[in-house]
Image (cartoon, rainbow, N blue to C red):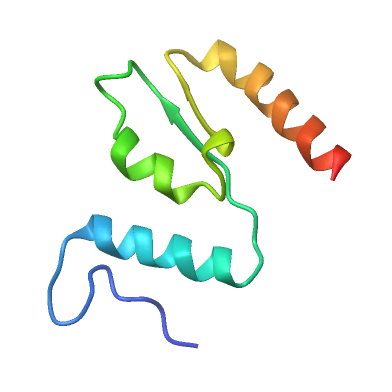
Length: 81
């Protein structure tokens, strides 16, 4: 199986490749969560938010300590489906 190109052929921004892959896996039925780690101005929310399957599946946190709480919320959401 061929590996995806780092940018759309012949050239294109890397963000377009990331968004296209997210759309591809979501169309295949995969649920995607996106987590931005950093201060709101440091996280590319405009890139990460559309990656998630639903806006409620995009999280942003300023520090790693909050990740455990986010992972618990995701686990509860998965378990309740």
